[in-house]
Image (cartoon, rainbow, N blue to C red; front, side):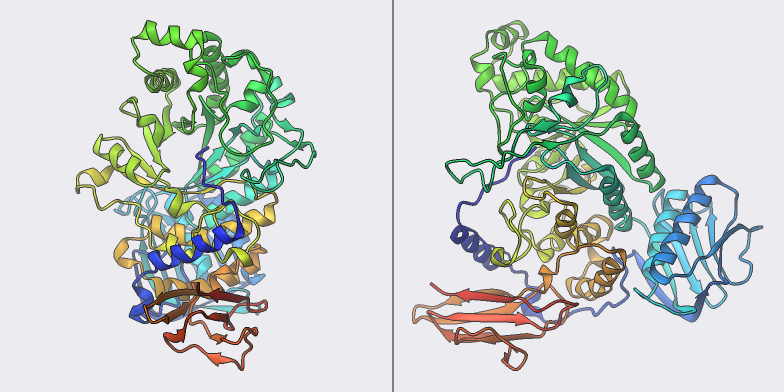
Length: 625
């Protein structure tokens, strides 16, 4: 797993918080409001044109399909279930002869559409709703959009849906999220819920990070000790890695997924048109495996499943043939469980100190004509890639696998900023962008003093929304190698499903729009307006979403005369900010923020946004030096 910086003190966190705001504040803060888009559809469609008429959805409405195709029947059933969740109306499903009959939602496959496998058309009129696509995949996304046209939390006998014509297709073919179950094991029911969240946001890839130093989570029948030993650790570090001396909770924790559970989850994802890509880390982040089979290391162990976060020095021995026999046997079982043409093999954060001092590794280097340990890792990765090719699989790896060369068909996932992705695209490798500073969802999303413990960093809703996965440094021909992007949820501190939801939402909505929507259709003010309905949908679905976007943030500049210009803003739509400068907490009758504050430094400003959806407004405190 790609590592992240570990913050050492609250003071350090707050300093980072302020610096990121100062340097990353977008121009929209100063430009005033732009488009007021209250349609509520996320991600923003390619084209959306209002039309006359209002469709009246009721218990008499039916969902009809133009074929008896089992995929369409399943899509119709999921649509019926979703409509019930939001309206409490249960719609019947039936096959139609080819045209809408009466008060109906009509799902139709058409071979004459040019919107691709994931595109669709949606038309709402007085006499019915028509959903059309070339494939069931496209129709599925059409139903997800239709659900967003429903008034969130509506109760009544008739639900009005305004007339509209929507034409839509995604910007990128790869739109994904990573869930790390190595640090925190999540039960299968939550994994399915995670997949539901992906589908709700029109994402099509579930990157399942299954092995780590802190836990091996996939049953491998040939190697039972991987789950008997490797799936469990005897404690977990308390606090941060940088907190010394280290303390541990002494609580045995862990778990794993049986092969039958994995098949069930893969089938569940397939029904929602989501590809599941497993990640089996190598050669690093392997201490849980080495605890079970220490003979695969350079030293022979013994090892324990790691109770610490961070990077471990003990990795698979590249000079030992047993290592490759083991990995090939593991991957044989993995390939049989996952129909995806891709296997993610990690390749990141692999310290070479053990290889440098290992007789077998040095002999391997000499035999293969390798000049250094980086080339030995390239040998390791390429050997595994060639094996997976015999299983009709291709590899995905973190950007470190580029260091000394990799097979041409390898896909590179760029996490250490964008440089790895740029280099890969220029070398004609397919690329998935996942830069930690932009799309890591284990980072703080609001003021650290107001947020639950996170690993560090700072990725707000606005910062993610403003990110463009296609680097400007690429030529038009090179941009075709950017396949899309992924958000990542690493779970050192995210130990409960409810906390995972808090870190995912609403930032997953911003991710969905940067992956799906054409840049010309994006608009930060419009997105904030649409999020007001999205929050209500999250509430209806029972999602423990974060309200950090309502927190007040600041951008300040102080001149040589100690005069400060302070801008207050939020990541929410039309905030109502009130503030104080006397150290007291603001209330609704406190001074209302209407523009740049001019105060003398040093200052203490306390501010709160009173236009929030539920809950008491949080007070942010800003102090000058």
